[in-house]
Structures are given as structure tokens and as C-alpha cells.
Amino acid sequence: MTKKIQVHELPVGVVGLGLMGSSIATCLLIAGHPVVAVAPISADLDHAERRIREHLSRAQQEQLIREAPDYYFRNLTITEDYQALQPCGLVIECTIESPEIKKTVYGKIEDVIAPDALLTSNTSAIPISQLQQQTRHPERFFGLHWSEPSHTTRFLEIICGEKSDQTVAEYLYALAHYWGKEPTLVRKDIRGFIANRLAYAMYREAFYLVENGYATVEDVDRACRNNTGYWMTLVGVFGWMDLTGVPAYHTVMKDLFPTLSNSTEVPRLIDDIVKAGGKGVANAHGFHQYTPEEAKLWEETYTEFAYDIRKLALKYPADVVKRKLGEQGGSGTSGIEGEIE
Ligand SMILES: NC(=O)c1ccc[n+]([C@@H]2O[C@H](COP(=O)([O-])OP(=O)(O)OC[C@H]3O[C@@H](n4cnc5c(N)ncnc54)[C@H](O)[C@@H]3O)[C@@H](O)[C@H]2O)c1
Image (cartoon, rainbow, N blue to C red):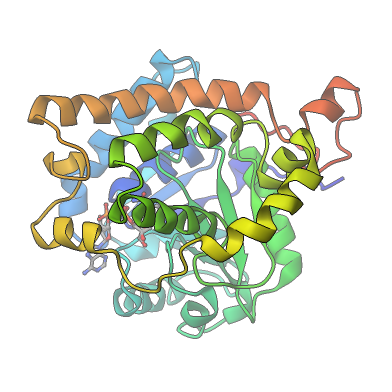
């Protein structure tokens, strides 16, 4: 079993306080870390504190945490000064998806942190092996891929680049359980990591079905929600095949795989929307039709849903059956208390 980690003795830096930086900072505060939140651009100072406070207020309302936001704010420093990162044993970079900007930010971080402090990126898709080339100590660099809103989701990918130290990756894997995560360790760097590769394979097929007239956007979404949407919080793809009978999948694959889309083009349907300025519910222009009121309510409904699905995910963790049999600690988790409430 992994040695207990004293989270309150491990200050963590978050650099970049946009959408994700704010919710990651919230997650770390809830877990008990002192958090140094660095705003690389002054505009972050206009919204970061408000966003983190709103996340904590909602988390209290939803009984994810017991204390009021001020209790957690005692552990938070928000600043534009990179020097404040000096005591941090771990820094999470969360700036826009640009290798050039991230490189500049790494320079500023590495000027300040200790040589053995860990440096990580929340990049969605830039290969970790590429990003770590831009740092002075590539062996202490990893991908930490969160999903929004980070303080309620159970997902976290820990990604090793070619030069990352695998032993340290195991430490990050253990640490992630203190953040309420059920993490995934990506042992070899690959574009898109795990979850996005799986999801984009499905997105590509969805476009193929709609663009070729087999079904509408609405029908594809309904099938997705009521099929995979029903079982995926309990089991992954391999668990699902085990649960429902492996040989049938073997039979279907032979005939179905050759018919699936393997297009390498960006689909026309999404290209048209993006070129017309469509962003989805953010501006009420996406694949579905929305009035501005409906779009706003979708955002609120997603926040509400994030808390509900979290409750279900906590009721059915990956080792649910082992737990039922009283064999805790023998599976994919480190045996550390994972839940943060
Ligand atoms: N939004 C998601 O759901 C999501 C999910 C997983 C990973 N990510 C990744 O997380 C990172 C941040 O995404 P986000 O959604 O929080 O974006 P965001 O646009 O909300 O925030 C971006 C932040 O980047 C920083 N920034 C902007 N311009 C900068 C500059 N010139 N120099 C230095 N810093 C600058 C600022 O702190 C800004 O708040 C990206 O790499 C993104 O791919 C996002």
C-alpha cells in the first residue's frame, strides 16, 4: 500500500485561472492543499476569485463539502507573481492550448520552483513528450488531464512523456485519490491520450451517420444517451463486453468493423458551424437549435447533473464488487481514501 500523503503539507500551484484552472484550484482546496493560484494575465483576476467562491458555495449546497467557502479560502493565494510558487511541490499549468505560450509559462515557473518539484500540464491534446522538451527537467514533467468541472468529476489522466520518471507517475496516481479521482495512468504518450481517443472515434462515426442520412443529430444523440449513457458510469468497454457476453462482440466485429468510418477529414457538418461562429450552448449556436434561454438552462442543467452523476459514480466505483466482498485495496486503487466529502 502507498504511504499516506499529507496533503495539507503539500502546496500546489495552479497557473492559468480560466474555466479549468478555477475548478482545479477548487478541487485542490477541497482536498486540503494550500493552493497558489497564479494569474498569467491580469484578466484572470477579474473572475478567478468569484468562480472559485461560486464553485465552493455550490459544493456546500450540494453537501460535497461541509464548511463555507471562507474556510477553504484561508488556504488560497491568488496572485500575478510567479515567485509565490516557490514552496510548491507540484505545479499544474492550465493556460490556453498553445505550445508557445505554455513554453513561456514553463520558463517562468522553473525559474522559481525547486529542482525536484513536479511540473504538469492540463493540455487536452499536445503530446507530453513534445511539451517536456520545452522544460529544463523533462523527467519531472507529466500530463495531468482533468475534466470540467474538476471538483466534481472522477476522471483524471496521468500521462507519461518519453522522458517522464515512471516512479513519480505512480506517486501522482496515488495523490489523485486524495482529490476524489478514480485516475487512469497513461504509461506511454499517445496523441489524444485515452479518453479523447475513445470519444473521438465515436464522434467520427456520429458524423458519418448524420452526414450520410442514416439518422438525424437528435436520433444519434438519443441512441447514445440511452445506450452507452446507461452503462458507462458502471463499467468501461471491456467490462461491458464481459458483462454481456464476449463471443457476440467477436462475431459482430468481423462484419461491422470494415463498415465503420475511418475518415481523416474534419466533417463538413462541424466545419460549417464553426465557420459561421457557432460555439454550442455558449452562444446558442451548435448542432441542436436553442433559444438563448434554453442554452443558458442547459449550462445550469449540466452543473446540476455533474453532482447527480458524481453520487452515482461514488456508489459504483471501479472496485464495487471487491468492496462488496470486503476485499478493499486489492484492485486498481491505491487503497487510499478516495472520496473528498
Ligand atoms: N475546457 C475544458 O473542458 C478542458 C478540458 C481538458 C483540458 N483543457 C485544457 O486546459 C487548458 C486551459 O483550458 P480552459 O478551458 O481553462 O481555457 P480558458 O480559455 O478558460 O483559460 C485559458 C487561460 O490561459 C491563460 N492565458 C491566456 N492567454 C495567455 C497568455 N498570453 N499567456 C499566458 N497565459 C495565458 C489565462 O490564465 C486564461 O484564463 C487548455 O490547455 C485546454 O486544452 C480544457
